[in-house]
Length: 161
Image (cartoon, rainbow, N blue to C red):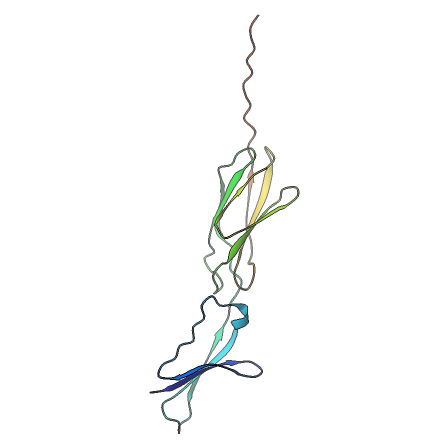
């Protein structure tokens, strides 16, 4: 049976795991603190030099969310929808930040891929930005704009003389 060890290479190497047989290095929900270079050493015979391999674990910011669009546009509300990023940067998306250029500017944090916004001004154009965040932070925004609708005017009845 081989003897396998994993070591994180930093200023002072940090022992991760070691055992007889097979060994796996698995990160679930990786964080930026786990980034770095890791070395795996395996040997079948304690009298021989170990076989060594190195791997680099990297996590990046997620790319921008995809396919943003605005639906159910009314005079004072709208629904903003988007798809998850095609590349999460190597770490799952935790949340989304939605920014709308209302006065004052509005910012919503959500785990969903949609956002309902209320209290808009009638017949006004708004810019919307949506960012995805993973363990590293927020990536680039996807942007769109929409115009809220004119209010529905109630008809006026004029009685004849």
